[in-house]
Picture 1 (tube, rainbow, N blue to C red):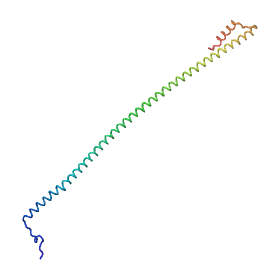
Picture 2 (picture 1 turned 180 degrees about the vertical axis):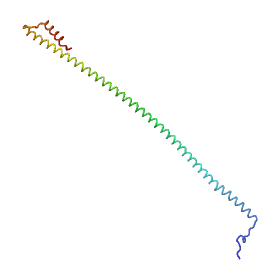
Picture 3 (picture 1 turned 30 degrees about the vertical axis):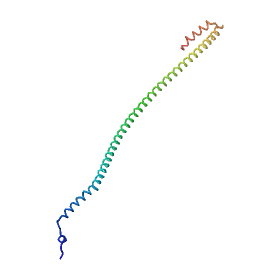
Picture 4 (picture 1 turned 90 degrees about the horizontal axis):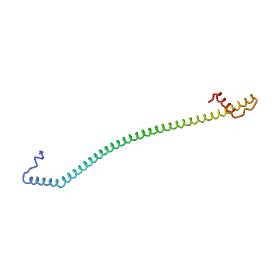
Length: 170
């Protein structure tokens, strides 16, 4: 016949069970002191290092974002300043161009006026020369018509005034 194993092992409740429980509890206390507490300490330190690393990473990320924002604002400010400088340079260039144009126009007007004056003075010189030659020719014609020379200064003045009055050239 087959008997179950539990039925074949006799259980004795005596003082040995109490000693075994005490030894088991002492073994647990020894394991707690020797293994569990040092391992728990190592785990706590590791967790603290991980948490410190995460805090440092978060702080670095925040600092990086702050720095990026600051750099962007500086770039924007530099861009605005550059646009202002370009605008001012463009304005200055336009003002200089206008000033140069006005100066060139003034020089051109001066040259035109000088040329007009030179033309007037040359015209006047040519007219004076023409009047002198006309009065000389008039005196010569009058001398031939009169049959005598009309070479004195009074006759010359009369001829010149007649030529000037009759010519209508002024």
